Image 1: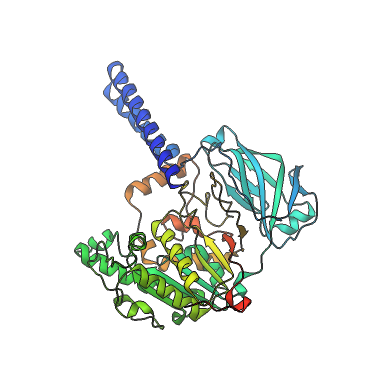
Image 2: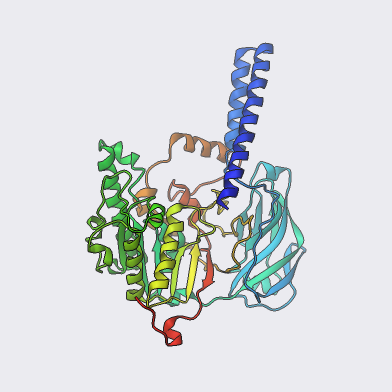
Length: 477
């Protein structure tokens, strides 16, 4: 998938270069025939059009079908859109995760304004120019769907009259023992604040300090190393303190203190120590002093892969989680997220305790950096899956308005999500608000306040099979 993204990115840049050359040639031609101020107006209008309609990072064609397969035996039901309401042929469990597979075709206006599918009191936005199969999230609207009263209509798009409903059954994982693996402070809140804030037994482990890209602190007069150290300390504090807003005691949170963007390098050389790229530090014990639990990495403080895997093994055996939340290794492209899940899987193989289920989340995407699309507060349609993914289940718990507000406030406490976006990004948003009809929430200016504070949270469900405690065998710690 990464290779495919590189190809698409190369093609995207080539097209932009060709477009730029065409614009410059047109400008030169215009410059010979009209006054200079007309040329300035022409270039300004072109730039505004680019910011309004051509600046999205979409590394696939809107006409590509999403390709999802679900576990064998997942119930499927034919659905018909009749007189503006969905009619399901058959009885289904209305309390489970409900996904509607349907073909959507953009209208001509949908090439300039985001196509929207209005589903009861929900709204799910799609790519401009969409013309393919998409997967809408109907979770929470099962009763209206079963009674044939769930209204569905397209705005700036047409929805095909025939569709397929997938019903994905799961227990309420919030009632099981949870361990959340967060590569950085804020990953747990972005993906699962709604889930962990109602879970009676939950622990959160944050893998890295998140100390890099500390320009904001350099602007305060600190040198690069001092700024990185301060940012690492602040984000480490966030990882221990912010979960209390969701009811998770500090004693249930652990900061491992490894260094940002170094996990992949650590995996390739497991015995080698990898210090911070910016702070100059090489000892993970400094930010571990508030941990309530002693860990194997505390012995020498070395940021090595072996210590990371040993720490995670110890945490599995200490907390004995039934469910572990971790980044989706095929969907989320962040190198720390991929390596963090890899370290977890190695720890599971070494541990005397084996969880039953992985819940996988994606805070970043390969193909579309606007997903979930549309304003905050609405539902989460399934993300792009242009290449086949493993046939995992899905679980999409609901967040009511009060929980969504608490989640937004939790994100607001995270130091990395504070501050104003750069001027160019603010100007682009103003242009898109005026010309493309896009809106951002008042709760925070970082893009994650729009993307993560939603009607649903979304997890891919991957079963791990029988654990040693179930089959009577003992695994070597």
